[in-house]
Image 1: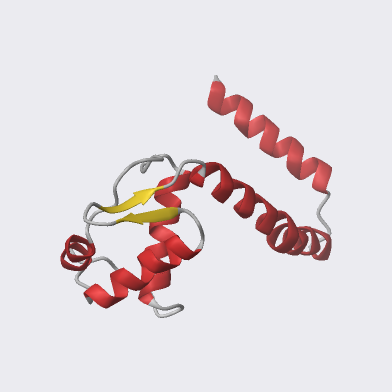
Image 2: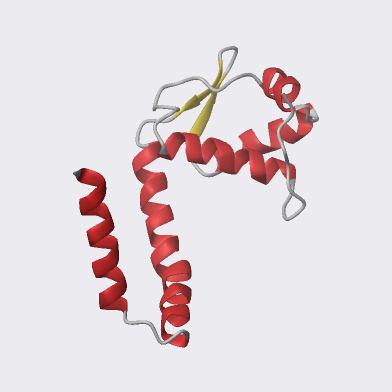
Length: 125
């Protein structure tokens, strides 16, 4: 089945994001082999060069290594490093925007957090 790609960013970056999400979610674990470029290209109906570019980005980010003759593998510590980087980016980029929007709307952040806590409690019951 063909993946639904969006026009907001290049396909290789969207593929990279999908792999990053799989690492963060634990679908792909440290030491796991990534599917071959050819397999990804066929499965997602994309050019092999596009898949290769996504993999190269993961190597450049220090999350994946290429083992000659064996393929691409997720490095030890990749998930932890990725989570730290994503948390930092969220706190520095996204969170200030959220706080600004909360303030703009005149909402009380403590009440919002209380609502979140209540929802979490209901989910646990």
